[in-house]
Image (cartoon, rainbow, N blue to C red; front, side, top):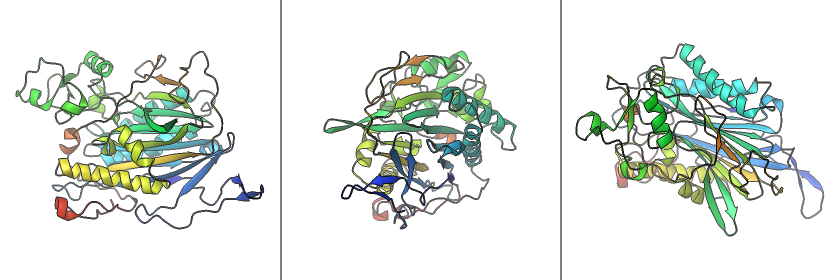
Length: 427
């Protein structure tokens, strides 16, 4: 399980008492949620006088053939980064391969540590973020963890005052809820990095990767047809990356941390970074592993989260629905991790865009499309939903054990429906 750093449940900002006009201290929530077994956590952002209210849930996947398989997801929440009350970090890391759990835990610790120790973080957050990812990747290569065929994705959100910096490597996702009149819209803060994307496909091809589905590799389909449709129609057999003369590594993503073998064919740790200026129209954001988004679109996740005042309820509902859909469609589930951060009390209308920003009101300001050169700026593309399978992950046996303290299991649909355990063990 990822660590929650700098808990602030005993220190809350003052708030206005609507009845008396006097200031009073918010009292901590002492009781734990029945499903997440977590207290509701809040942290102030004093520079802009708003509060972040958040919760997280991580659910061990169900793998009938490897019941001892550990949860390879991890997460990290660190408030008041560098001792600054206006800087907060939220990240989800989805490990894969035989040593995926070790990789995800290594990265969730070292990435935030790198950011915390970077004296240029406030002066140039984009450069600091990029450097932290690349340095963490190098450290993982040099560590005792075997990352030749193992690694992790990383979806992270750095809150700096009223600005979000969203750095993504892989196919986990962040999405933000935007109030638009009577509607609540889902705006992706990241874009899945897979061979379905033309830009990513072309980049890895230039690095020498063969891009083929499993059926193409096995000779069941023509390997010369380099068109796989989209993730909706071809999610069951997506395009994967292979070395020129071998049947490995078979990654369905084009970026990750670790994966030193796949790195030689273009699977890089350079993050794509999006920047968002928060306004009163932003309600909450979600950071989650692809175990959530495998069968749920960004729009559905936002709609479900918007139904709950308590982010713990929202986390439990979304994780439970994700789990159910996995069992409806397959004989297993992926690990599922979700962080929901509600934005409370932000009253600014948003600063005007600068010359280098895209003026989108409450939408994305700019998106840094990182490759080996992260200087380009482009408007984001909306992507809703994805259907993926984890052949690369399930090909690897998971025999190496790491002791981790995870959040309590959620209650999933009745075993009479799926012939599965009604309550999962905590990894």
